[in-house]
Length: 234
Length: 401
Figure 1 (cartoon, one colour):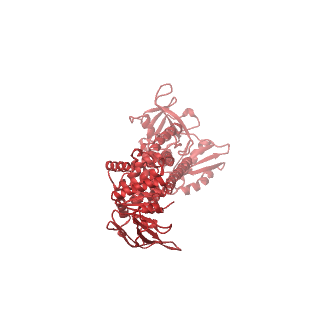
Figure 2 (tube, one colour):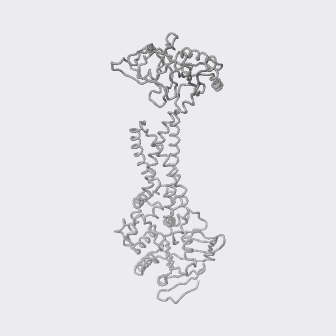
């Protein structure tokens, strides 16, 4: 599903060269649920951005579903993002001037899906996250947990095979965080591959596979539920 | 991909900025279309054909201060002196100078006083048969005055009963084209029309009667006399320099003043209109610039406010062109509402201008052209900021800003 070979990302300013990712290697299989942890500034977000094609890498090879991402231009990356990837952001990133329906519709519009089909998919997703009755509400009329559920519905609307979640529960209290996590687990069980960046060790522990990014490099652990001590080095 | 509906919805939900921009566009459209119309009217007015070869004609005044002058005899002497100056085609004494803003006028009717008939206020030129040649205007019908028809006198009781009128006046008074040989009346005094001239403007370019003139073969000289002199092409400057010397050679108890070329007379007469026109042009440029800057600024502000949203849209699959299109559509929506409001305002404004400043009705093409121009300028103003927005990295979606 996702293969990164020797990915490097260097941020260059006039004075400083920063290696955000160094010879980063990762293989993610279809249907996996991976938690990415690591200290602040370790390169987690850079990894997520590159995985989601939100930014380019300096060198290396990245294959997403067999497509060599490095050879794509900006428009092709945008199209591939739209088709293959669903994003869930820490701050939800809902568009405040659009109601829930319109928010979820955004990626479908960029894909050029017809109105009736869009409506069907949006309502289906709203029902999935339990907010169908609030389709006409604006994001600010919802609680944080509800907003994140809308964001998840938006990420799922395009039926992506790959979900990238950036601290999806970072702005939520523990009850709401648990609900969102349960929703993600359900989505994973339904077949989507999920890569989730998180600070929360408890949340990470719930993912079948954990990887840790330290100084732009990867330490890979597979955690087995109920037995967190067992870890296999990458 | 059509984003019109969500854009409309989004605009409805956060309207303040949009309404301010809409008002700016509306006011610009209303003011610019009316100003453009006024400018066009002024241009037509300024560029109207006068019927004169302005650069070959000049005028001057003679003020006598001696008491023992026979003005009539002096006038005839002066005319013949002037006509003999090398380079002069013809010269004439006249009661009023075309394009000068000063002269006399009266109402001419189809019937004498007491009988109801059509009448028009026309300018009156009193001069001998040299008048038409001195101003370079042709007859289109009829004939010039004969010497016997010309009355040289201070006595209005001997006022002539024949006249030459302009074609415009003949068409107004005699729509059937039978002016020649007919008689018109100034009060009870008849004027038989013996000739009709080509285009010839009167003293007042601004007034309705600018094209309606009556030339009467009456010469009355007094302390102050006015002359019109026409020269060969290219000779005018030289003749203008010599004219004072020639005039004073026969009588030094007088002064020659106001030696002016015809185009200078016209320029002076129309100078307030030229000033108004320039001010309106400056106003249009300033207004359009302010509007363009307003749109530019508001779009930039919107982009800064929506950086994260733009990044998110990019993350969700928007191409750069989608982002540019979004801002163009948003701007077009606001502009369209602004232009419709502006067009209505333009009509209302034009009605008030018609009422208070006797302006003609604002023609629709002025509103349409202005609206299209404002729309184009507004779209041009938004392209730069929109492209900037399109260059916002999608990675901004995952950053805390």
